[in-house]
Length: 482
Ligand SMILES: NC(=O)C1=CN([C@@H]2O[C@H](COP(=O)(O)OP(=O)(O)OC[C@H]3O[C@@H](n4cnc5c(N)ncnc54)[C@H](OP(=O)(O)O)[C@@H]3O)[C@@H](O)[C@H]2O)C=CC1
Ligand SMILES: O=C(O)[C@H](O)COP(=O)(O)O
Image (cartoon, rainbow, N blue to C red; front, side):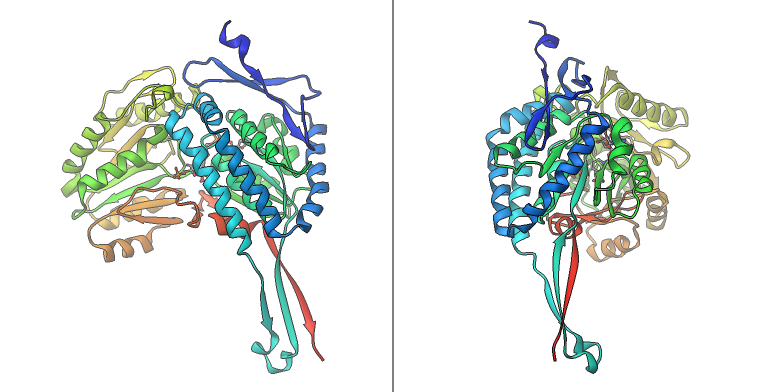
């Protein structure tokens, strides 16, 4: 039987029932590697989206009345179910978003760990007592009892690149804090997201507590983000979409994890072997389709040649190929993404950059590109490629590196490679980013560290404890003692 005959059609979960849409329409996802169908998801109607939001709102009250420990039980069971479905989910991630199998499997395990830690951390969230007398003596008979309570219904919108991890990273903190969730996965990634919800359903999810909404963001997005029963939007994706959503959202908080242009700044005294290893790992894993990928190298001229030689060798050793073969550099998510990377490379080479690797493309598979002598008039110096291209900008001094780093519209993370830690801290304090990595690649994990972007890289902070806090509000009860 041909592949297209056997690809599955997936249903959405609405108030405890797996359903097909009354729209009668489905969206077919094709493998980024060879365009074979992976399966189809439902294109839901506005009415069904409305039922998802109102159903979640109805389910939230009972859930919020449970204790943290009772809510944690669901999360532990969910993590167990995910691990039981590990191979099936990893295989789906691999096919649907073109991630190497072992990375896909790691994503599932990391997600289960994330959920378990969230359950534990949730149990440690507690309020405080404040005595009014610390403000003025006359208020000493006032006692404020400050507790944290859930916001209500959280809208979780996730991107394609970590279709399970970045989805659960929104859902688990929301649930442990007593919220309900409406979950809208990226369309390319929605099958992996659906399997993740299946695991949650198998774990004993109360009806309506998490409703799954599938359909194109461009069609149902506005309806969802402006629905009056949504109490917070937690979005990860492109900066343009994020900014658009934050303008639509009215009088509700928004958490945004957006794009990046993370620089690796390499100083004269850096351990170049270590720096090159981290830069290639950070720049090319999952073909550079990570918000935290290293997206430019700012290297001091004096050590640039030596660093470049090491980068070239390490890039040569990268596995390029299909996700089934566990390659590191695999076909990009779609043709448009591959075209975009190609344009960036063409623009740079046209303006005088030196390609140090073969420029080669087969369908959506773009071979890793190392570009030397990139200058600030080239688009690749500023745009996020979300693909396997690494520009090297040679700088004369540290000040120049910091200026170029900060001129970016983005501010997610930056790496500084040097043996002089004091110097690294000083440079770090000048960088307009959420996190600075000293002698290490830029990355989100470990997942309990705060994770945030400044400028166009985001709004609000993630990281397990921060994520839980951000889906709660403080409730103050004042006891006036006689
Ligand atoms: N800072 C961070 O932590 C991270 C940032 N990213 C960023 O994400 C981008 C890549 O992810 P990608 O999936 O392509 O991002 P997109 O912005 O294209 O899509 C993200 C999500 O938004 C949805 N969406 C699209 N339009 C709307 C709308 N009008 N209203 C509501 N939802 C909408 C999409 O749905 P649909 O798929 O149906 O269009 C998808 O679920 C990169 O820029 C990357 O840097 C990625 C991961 C982490
Ligand atoms: O989407 C992304 O890029 C992730 O947030 C990155 O996570 P990682 O740095 O842990 O791979």
